[in-house]
Length: 563
Image 1 (cartoon, one colour):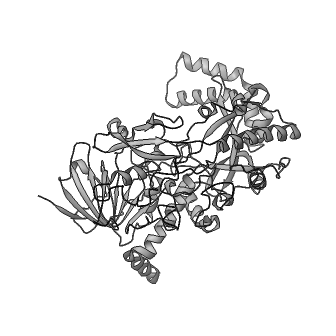
Image 2 (cartoon, helix red, strand yellow):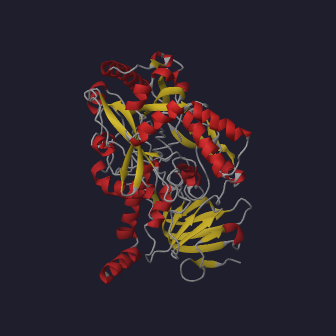
Image 3 (cartoon, helix red, strand yellow):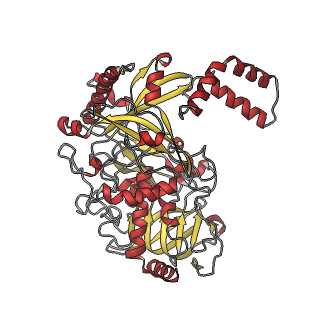
């Protein structure tokens, strides 16, 4: 027997349900269905709190890590080397991959949005400037500081402005670090304390794996989604608008696998779903002698910005200038320092002692730790001097100091997500990835590495010892690694022959189907994508509110009239 539930109308009063505990073969009716509870999905859902729009969020996982659910992320790789252990880069859990991220964010450059003759398939159908209000709002969701990422920051940092870079060749760049609303030592974990309490129009269903997108016979309108638990309990969700917010790989996989009604997959009438797979190929440009890298770490390290919302942490890096990229036909890339702290670092030792005392674990080990701290008093003193007089974080004793780089990828339609012949526990084909890295990426990071050496020499800073592979013509691909930032597989374009979604993130030719996340980005830039993901999601939420779901607009107008 099929039981029908209309969420938000008094039939179900709880905000969180578990599909495993509901009756089999439910038909769930709602206004808006969001597939995925990561930064994209929950940012959209939060925008509808208190409106008349009934929202259902479908999450594959639960509130804690589950190996059986995580196994659904298995991939087959036939392209450039990628991280095969998906546990370290993606999470099927409430909050999505924000459960494991490090919190670093930055917006894309204006250059990233422009059509560039030397970057095929480049150019966005929206401008970076039009996104700024959403990036500011996204920053509030992420707990970051002011929307500022240029040299105006020096004054805000309350430090002396260092000698300027040669901006005709390289330019300064900055990242921020997300901060959790209740724990400033952790980045925002969207599954923890992000959604407000008492939002009866928002319903979250855990252990709800979407297995098929159902359209009408013509494939022109999305009518429902099929859902299943790992144990085989089924449900069907019908909604006026459905948003896929599953990530750069899963969004494409789900659309391609929904092929019972439309043979080549939903929204894939132009064979574009899954193509243009990009990431941020990361590589080590070189390394420094840890004992002589203090000056470099001081200049290109972490900075603090204090405001009414607390302390915000920034990282300073160096990138290719826009002028040089155009002149030499290079891709956007930026480098920063990655430091591995030494085991006998004095500040780590002090933290260990503090933890032991707080936990009441007084032992011989505690006394040895205290003695170690006393013998390292000069290092402790220098750290205190930096913290309280220089307004800078401590420079820890380092075991390794490397110059690491993120580079934009050249969009390539042959770099793609496909379906494997192997299926997962739900009977869905797993993802087959053919990730391609081009020679243009190597040339770009190589040029940046040599320019950094020249610039450090001019500034009197110690130069890195560059990695030998940078000059190799063959076999260099293995020195790049994916950074868990899959991008571009459902790219945006107002031309249906060039993209999967339009500028409002609605799938071309499929009414009611929208996509959120980095899979809609036409180009990837070098910046970590989460701020862009959240900003774009808020933009989509606004469009749905004011253009697609009139119930939300009526609720907003009513609230404004009361005020």
